[in-house]
Structure formats: structure tokens, C-alpha cells
Length: 109
Image (cartoon, rainbow, N blue to C red; front, side, top):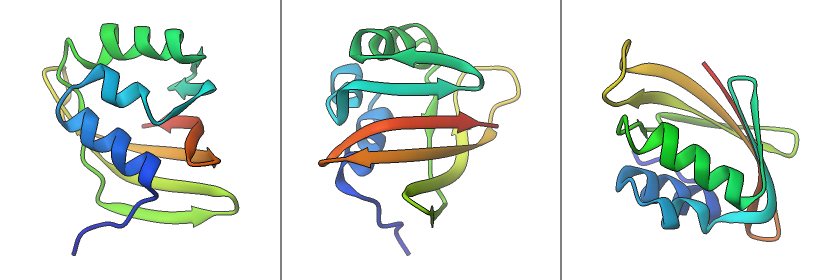
């Protein structure tokens, strides 16, 4: 059974599956924040740098297999596969949404 996700999250994950940086950035609010295993990336340009330097080169693709809600957060879990040591690694993404955009994501392993 497919996992149903809010549109901004589904759009981000579909673009990630294609390693499409522009498509991955599009669902984010202009002032969005990603906290990726303790590193903070604020704003679209910082997020673009994260995707261009740390996601695309190692072909890191997140494949969600579970979703739940924790208060106002959408929590999505699953493996990230790619060309990196230890692949696949299971990650948890905690998304905060605002007006049909991703406002924040906290990523933990």
C-alpha cells in the first residue's frame, strides 16, 4: 500500500528520487530550515548547497516506508540508499509545513 504524504513532501521525495536539485528545492519555503544530523541549513541557497554537495554526488535517495503525525509534524521514516559507506541507512525526517510548503525538516539517523 502506498504511503500518502502531503503534497510538498511528496513533491520533494519524487524530485529526490530523480536527484533533481531544482525539484527538491521547489517545495521549500524561502526561509526554510533543514537540520541534517546536527548541521543547520537555512534558506534556499544553503539548502541548494546541501543537495548539490551532499545528496546528488553520492546519489542519496530516501525511500519512505512509514509515516505518522506528531503534533504539527509529519514524521517520515525509511532507508536512504546511495553510493556511500553503510548504505542503506535508516533515517527519520520530521517535516513542519506552512501554507503548502516545507518550513523545516529535521533529519536523524
